Image (tube, rainbow, N blue to C red):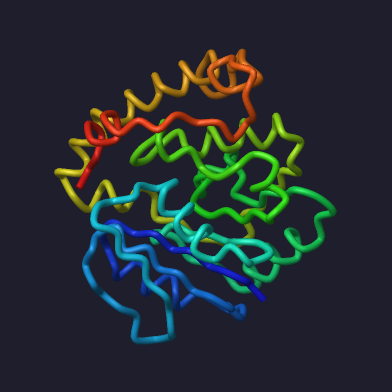
Length: 234
């Protein structure tokens, strides 16, 4: 059983519906984060909806689903452009529930079929160890997954890579909207530069063991309203 499944989307609700059709495990709470503010609703099964007044971004969407269900023992999030294969959800649940401490289950980045953060599952111990996604530094999307992985590895979180038979239609959000694609051309390099500033190097070449080389917890981040406003897509 999956305690909470979180699905944020910015466009292509049809892909959300396709993802829902691939579910073959019982879901206690299904949370749809409507970053598009479309008002669309599933007809196939009950769900709860978070409809923000502006796009929360990738990490922000994951965070919203987690903080709105704080009593859950663990959480699974999924991008709208993926599909679970038979038995994949049960396999993910088995890996999370079999962990003795903090754990992260996500895709294997060495497999070109599946981006690492197209889905992810974390338990309460992981949130306590490294915090939530940094939705300030890496808004609205990209590098939030590299940041979270690096924090997990620095925080001794068990990192489990699983692809199974999951299918992924890569970058469908950007490819489905030319305006968003143009905005991403600006924000992607900005987020890359912000990653270097936070960790002293690009992914795989980090030099800092703590954010911005400061004596702070791994969960530390800096609210940046101006930067968020500048980088918003919609």
